[in-house]
Length: 113
Length: 113
Picture 1 (tube, rainbow over the protein chains, first blue to last red):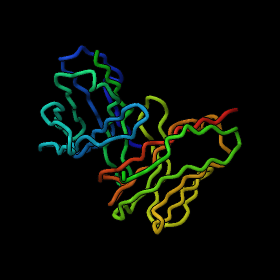
Picture 2 (spheres, helix red, strand yellow):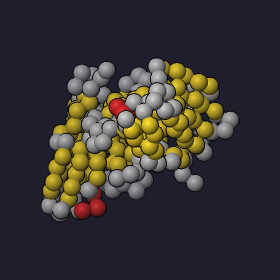
Picture 3 (tube, rainbow over the protein chains, first blue to last red):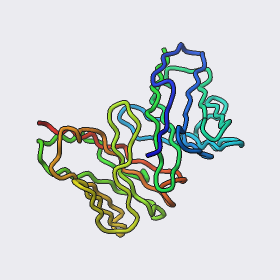
């Protein structure tokens, strides 16, 4: 099946700094990618839809100036958490759509100290 | 009322038992139903995908959809320790590929040898 990778798998950063997370579709092109956030024992919550060559679409309640999304190519989308705070600590997962399913990346665990 | 309700468990069963996992939903627009398996600190992987009401079987797994009751189930026969994971139901108003998914909270399953 199709493979989606994420980098880094785990990152620790200090409060106030910015962190960039990459999501790549390795063997297929994705004009759309989805970014989810998952808190412990909670469901995956869709944050935004990343569109190649255009602006991302953010879900209600997600600050677009804090979570910057760039979909610069057909195989790469990036999520930058700006001025991170401890409450941003979470598991961030991206997915890329196939014909019948979404292919999920392995996730990035962000810890903000 | 949340769109998708799923008992988070945890659920602990002995090896070989039949496991029943369930979700209810309130949005009649949901037409596509999926079950994902997520191992700890990993991205979800698709287990089953169904569209119509009724049963769909794949090996030890059976997905059941009852649209009239807005209720879906996943049955695991002859459960194995390797089935220990969190199981998430997901739903979409359109095809499961390119469209946004709404997830349940996930049920954490432990199969004891």
